[in-house]
Amino acid sequence: MGSLELSKNKCNGGQEVSLLDAQLELYSNTFAVIKSMALKSALDLGIADAVHRHGGAATLAEIASEWVLHDWGDNDCIKILKNCKKSITPRDKGGKVIIMDIVVGAGPSDQKHREVQALFDMYIMLVNGIERDEQEWKKVFVEAGFSGYKIMPILGFRSMIEVYP
Image (cartoon, rainbow, N blue to C red; front, side, top):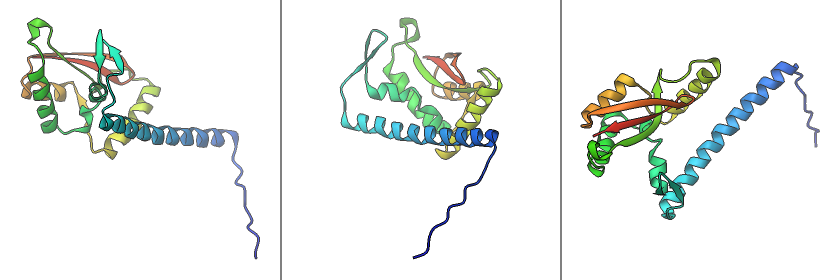
């Protein structure tokens, strides 16, 4: 039997750090997909209300739906939001839909946020999703029958969007 000879590629410290950063990012994204699959499994199993927020129990389905609209085209988003609108009280009684999603151009624009945005763009291409700016969101909200909205950038490139019936 022949022997296997391994050659070691030498790289300088900067290249090594870059490779490690890339590997870390790859692993992070891989595990994020696995976490998403685990959440879907938990939803499918019907795990009981376990997380509390806003003074009451939140089901896993409610939590998962907070970060879902970017995965859908405009027509599907409009259908989803129309169904949400049917389920909430009128605006004068406090009714609103809260959406956690990206509003392109609403958050900070420093180098780190642009890098994260670029990585998320890759994910959006993978799932055939859509990122929307404020005008695109407004079009979806109006077509779904909502009367108003408020966008509040809260964490990186994510925004909390309140949509009113």
